[in-house]
Length: 175
Image (cartoon, rainbow, N blue to C red; front, side, top):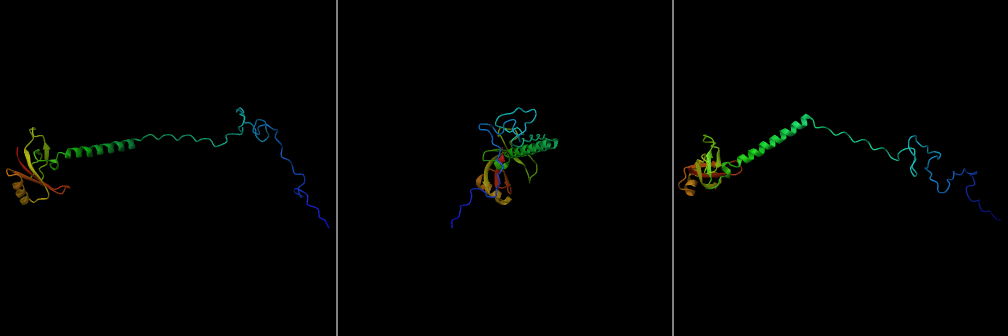
């Protein structure tokens, strides 16, 4: 017994509809093609679809925020605070902790506990004392006198500072 081979293709299909054929060399997106209506007011461009842009439009740029009075006020306050801090630092550089042997000092306060010594030019009329010795360390009133006696025989005053990060002793005499 001989069997015949099955027929080629789909045996259940019944003349399937053929897709419409585009003529050779024609642009499928050109004007006048079915399924691609041209929008009014837009000239046709070959190679581009006419139903609209191929992607979403770019959103408009957000409006730039204007600086408010409050923001400007806060910036001005911050600048003033920084200026005061820098000015205070520069002014404090003439304090006793920057004094060296041979520097002249001025007493800014009559208080014995806080004389507010500052370095001044020795030619300045405000110069009252000359630094004879500067000794690092923490000293009591009694030990300060003995240390100054060892370091500078003709000293008249001793000044100690401690707790500000660098403890030291200045031995001074009148200018």
